[in-house]
Length: 294
Image (tube, rainbow, N blue to C red; front, side, top):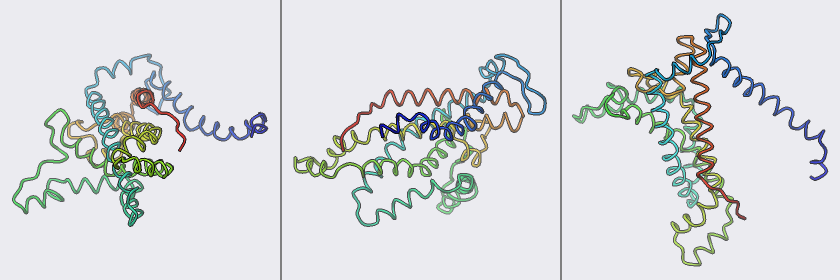
């Protein structure tokens, strides 16, 4: 291994494909988006440099206010709910011997299904005249407007979409935690039980500290995914009613591909990139990780 690490030519050869792919797929488009954010660009004519005009327009964009509020709501809800539910399901399934793979596959299945198809499915389920409301009507109960109610600071459609996203993606967090828990030596658990620890105490004092690096990783993935959240919202509400369910990704899509304001959409993209970086740094700072021998 030391001989390989001293071979600079071998290091360059092995790193070159990943570096080229990263540059072409990520770095170059990011640089282009930053440049376009300072331009008036409609995709047909050449970009026209206008300085900070697009960023000044962000300050007076009322829809952007809804988008930022909803994105932050998704961020907090996703990180907290998936952390709690993911850990609970991982701990529960780890202690189940019969049927573990069946339940694991059932919970993880929504993660691999098309978000567009699931969005349409849940749109019909929460339709005013179909799905849940139809069942409530047969019981003599008038169902709410699940995807159209605009009352409250966080409106009902946002809560509905948030719980649908939790149902779809909690399996991903569960699988990450289960993979980390399975790597913990069983002798540690046996020693804790011999010392008189209950299962909750063992989980709190042994399991949780040992899987903390995975907690930080899962929370970072959840945070970035929630800030980029697009497909379920677009298929269930398309940002309505009256832009009240817009998030940064849907607002970026509307401005760029509906109104052809590519410069302004790029400014929203730069804002989204900055938020993702800040949230990731915050999580890595708050969730302290230590390496233990397992």
